[in-house]
Length: 350
Image (cartoon, rainbow, N blue to C red; front, top):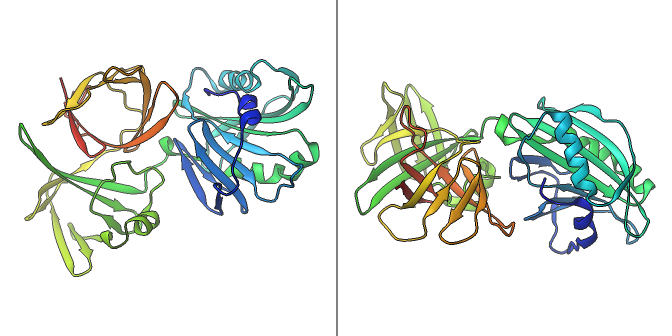
C-alpha cells in the first residue's frame, strides 16, 4: 500500500457532483467491489474512494481501497505492515486483535479495528482489512472520527468485504481471438472479444478490458457489438445483417475466409517482462520493462507496470495511472515474448 490513509483523509475533498452513484459493482486495479446501495464512489490515482450517500454535513466516513501489489510476506506480516502504513507517523492508541475473514469467493483475509491519534488529538476510528489473493495483497480501509457513524455503517462495510472479488484469482468474463499478420513496415491485426453472455465486440479497446463485461460493452459501443454462438465446432458471429462463420481446426484455432486464422489469446495476469520494446514499423519512445515490475518510457523516470488479465496498468513515477490493452502470443520456451500488442500497437523486443 503506497499511501497514508490519514493524509488522504485529511486532504480529501470529494466533489459530490462528481461522485458516481452506484448500486452495482465497480473495479479498480485487481479489485471488484459491490458498491452498497446509495453509496457514491470516485476513482483516483491514490485509490478507489467510497462513502455513504446519506451522510449529514457534520459527519464523515470514507472507505479507501488503495492500489494493491505483490505480497511481501505471509498474510499476518502484510496485515501488520498495512496497519503501520495506515497509521503513518500517528500513534496507534488501541488496536483489536486480528480476526479471520473470508470473501464469498473464498479469499482469506485479516481484519481489525483500532484508534489512531491525529495531530489535533482527535481519535480516528480505523478499520483495516487485508486479503491475500495468490501472490498479491489487497487492503481496504474505513475511517471516521465518530463512533455512532462507525457503528451505523459497519453492516455495509461487512457486506462490501464479503462480496469483494479479485481478478487475478477468477476467470475473466471473455475469450480473445486474434488474427495477426505483419510485415517489416506495417501490420494488420484483428481481435475479437467474445463475452461469456454471448456479446461479440469486434475490437480490443485500446484501454483494455478492465471493468468491461458484455452489458457494459453493449452500452459503450452500441451497434458495433453483435452476438456469437459456437455449435458443432463452428463459431457464428452476427451483427445486424452481417454474418461471419469461423470453423474450428484440429489445433483449437479458428479459420475464416475473410480474415484468416484466429488463435486464442491467453490472459497474462502477473506476467513479468524483461527487455526493451520499440514500436514495430513506426517511431516513438521505447518501453524498457524490468522483471521487478518497473518500466521506463523514453527518458522519463521509471514507473511501475502490472498486468491483470489483458489489461496493463502503468503507474508513473508521480503516481498517475493509465491502462492499456495487452495481448501476447508466446512461443514454447520463450521467457520474454518477441512481440507485444499494447494499446492497439505492436511493440517488438530489441
